Amino acid sequence: MKLTKFETARLIGARSLQISDGAPLAIESEKTSSLDLADDEVKQGKLPLCVKKQAKN
Image 1: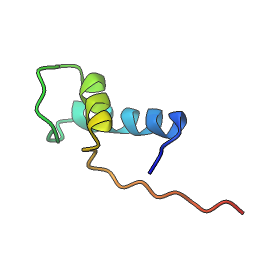
Image 2 (image 1 turned 120 degrees about the vertical axis):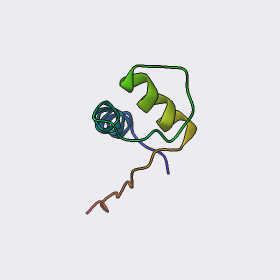
Image 3 (image 1 turned 45 degrees about the vertical axis):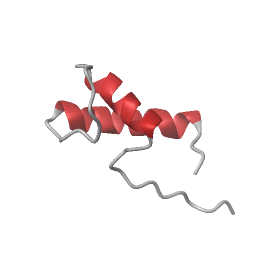
């Protein structure tokens, strides 16, 4: 599924908050910033979140 840049930014922000609150990581990385870690998870397609898109009317 192709995500828009706005959806991607929202997912990275939400996942970054989860990581900073102590959620387990879905990838192995040397990075320490929660924002960088969340960005890597999205880029690798290993985001542990479910995305539901609504149909356009």
